[in-house]
Amino acid sequence: MQKVMKNIYSMVFIASLLALLSSAPLANNMEGKVDINRATLNQLQQLDGIGKTIAERIIAFRNTHGPFETIDKVKKVRGIGEKTFEKIEPYIEVGRKQPLAAGQ
Image (tube, rainbow, N blue to C red; front, side, top):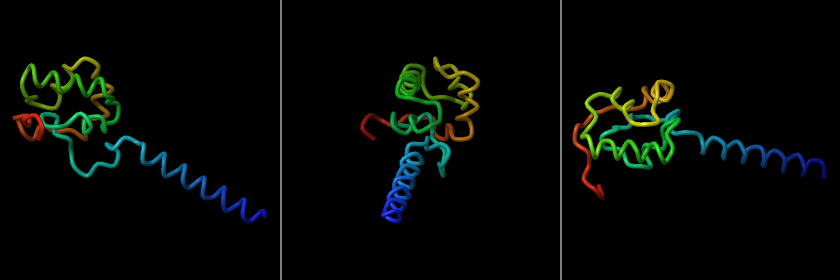
């Protein structure tokens, strides 16, 4: 019985660890960078410190003011200060100056 309980605890621990890792921000595990001129809401939310509200603000900002010329211009979006920018800076780019059309 003790062996069975030990196996159950081990499986619960592993499952908990996997769940924790899968919910971590993708920015820590990203292979490429997020193009802030083209990123979708979901892609932006994968960046550490960027939730739905700030992701929506990024999209609204680029739709209103045009594409970001440099990555530091994202700091003009309300809610992105120096600390948040420092977290996301290694994971963002402005590789393309034209946003995708809706639905792409």
